[in-house]
Length: 281
Image (cartoon, rainbow, N blue to C red; front, side, top):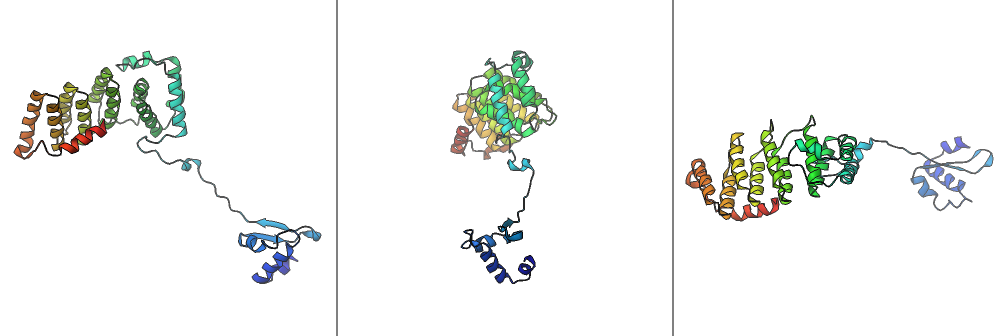
């Protein structure tokens, strides 16, 4: 019987298969089933026909199901669990002002969570946890996690990351922590920076009226090879004069004159810089 089916034309085979399904409520849908790739053959000894379908199953690595993290902005399941565990273990003590007191002020439970949950994460997940804690204003946990990240072999100090840390600490009026982070940034070897990163940091410090750090950052960026550009001078002059620091502004104006002469207009792009400050803070 099966050899007869194999030697028939496709149209005859289709009619024969539809006929074989008579009595089972499948005559009307026989053509649809055939189009879906089912194969119908008569059972042995007059038994009910067997409905078969060829299926192809493809397997792939489960790691491909998750989108890659970009700058730590997306949280994986492991990162979310780490954040939750860290917050549960947090003793709710004020954040430590120095790295030496970081380990002494943390609870044993928090240390266990860091070693068992956080330190086992991938690089991007670690950074994602840090940024999520910063977003939630978990200042003490952020400092603790940041110190652990600094111990990793892949860690590369970046001005932009320090700027994010300083922003959250300053917004929460933790100015001792701001000074600690700024000093830590200056002590880093191989600090990765760009002029935009320094300009952002200058804006943050000006917004919080940390004028000593503003002038120190202005000198520091030059000492590491990043000369201020036109935007840097405009940010400094406008920010200092807006806060009444005319003496400091005069120093910056003199430096700007040496760089650009009379061609630099400090009132230019005033609206753009002001809107940028609002976004950055």
